[in-house]
Image 1 (tube, helix red, strand yellow):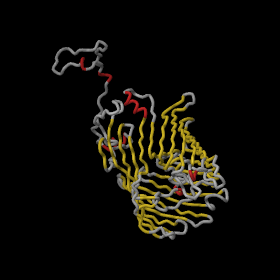
Image 2 (cartoon, helix red, strand yellow):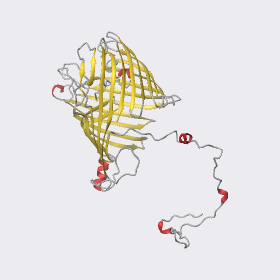
Image 3 (spheres, one colour):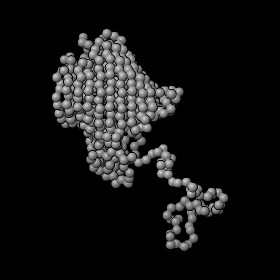
Image 4 (tube, helix red, strand yellow):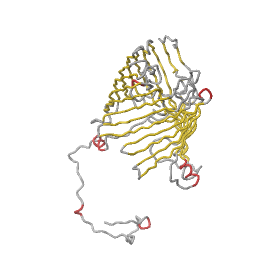
Length: 486
């Protein structure tokens, strides 16, 4: 045997019979056949391709859905790739590409919304347009062209309020349209030297999601910048992310009610900072924001705060504790729209099949009128359980999800079978703490959800719920949906 470390200068040509040249730092080693064992033989074993896949956890290539339009460098494909274009520097090359993707959802539903049994056919088109520039910079837009102001293309009948007939409004306005990138990568290209930091930025009609969408789940005109991937040995912090963000238009919240009683998304600005910290064998989330009203909202100014901690305990419980508060509002005599606190607790059991069989029990208590900082996707209890969320298409009912002067919880089971389908079954309740609670009395509900992929593009889903409400009509609904990805 011979050990060699030299490059091509030390390799003999295939037609060169002269003695092999060696680097002076290497030398031949004596061959010892005793250190080698015979090659394995499989004469009595039949080759089984499925068994070979199981060696790697049963992983195999999946034909994923491709966008309906891909121009330039495609997303998530094998190499080799074409060389990038040197526009802003060799260390941040341009790899231009444009893709269009999304999904179309069609649902039929029969919903009892508290005295009216409404039958609906609703359609929703989610359309993403993505223009990638470099490995870290892109411009992204999201459109929902066949629904407008909560009305979806389709048909509705049975509504005693008269909202029946065909809906077919087209909306070309973007839901989001923003630029995002990394100042560190941009600097590396312009200065032709590698940056030692990451500094992500985004601006435009920008979507923000904080605390699983409970504190912020909204797209507004504004932007943000993050100090990412920091750490502290002294505090035993493995990762710290701090994001500064703000907006001044198209901001949605139930707190933004003018003196005319109408929600106003334009006459308000928010300025906020949020932090994510990995420490104490878990992670914490913190945030503080200032809501600055203008014109008819000039008297709703207030400070919004939040804090949360998530961890696992004893190998059997996953737990999150979240606190939301709205303080400092002075509405000059009219009712306050944001003034109070909510404590939310989310729990799931770690079973013998932790990836597929997940029992959960969540609860909350709300005092006065707590509010999220900015969100237009359901109330503060949206993640407490499936009986607190609607479907985003039809009038599928839900229990009171405001957490205003109420307490309660949800108990359920989320079962994913072999990761090829999902079944959720749940029971929940809302109890009032004060006569001014948003809920007019005690509420109870049961609900279910089942969804299964038919192909890698088509998903079938059905939901049902029934709710009993004190001092109000009961509610209930059942719906069936087909979702096609493209």
